[in-house]
Amino acid sequence: MRVLGVDPGLTRCGIAVVDGEAGRAVRCVEVDVIRTPPDADLAHRLLAVADAVEGWLDRHKPDVVAVERVFSQYNVRTAMGTAQAGGVVALAAARRGLPVTFHTPSEVKAAVTGSGRADKAQVTTMVTRLLGLAEAPRPADAADALALAICHIWRSPMRTRLAEAEAKAAELARRHKARLASAARGGAHGAAKGTTKR
Image 1: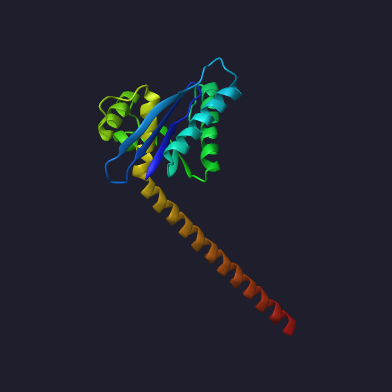
Image 2: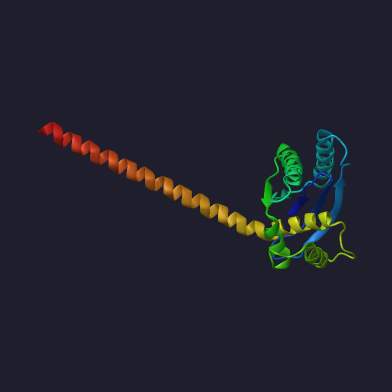
């Protein structure tokens, strides 16, 4: 499986490609940070992120795109920019028919460090170790993008099984409701016939 991991942002957008399978070693293909000037027009910054992401998609041809789910209870302005960048990434992937999965920061931290409360230094250390990198990826946005890709590789089989179980449960519930509706209609029809005979 080849995963494009993206830690969305306008000033710095971490982006990485990782190859691997669940339960096996993971390998870094490429990692970088897309940068846009803070004083530039928002539309042009988003366009720059989109162009860069599309270049990565065309060059590496990933099977899936993993994006960090935006969460911020303090800085709404930063969260808005991050969400907009994430949306641009999802759109670029959707245009190519690629599935996009959003992972929460705590989910990613737990996957690579074992703790959903790990700090950025711990995530960087574990990513460096897991991928066997000669040096730690910098800045932290690059390490976060690698962590997202690793998280997806390791968690995707569980997510797939969960989705299949949910689909099966929904189908069983649909069939049960249909049987109940059919039984209710049959009972009402019988009652109506009984009333007519009197």
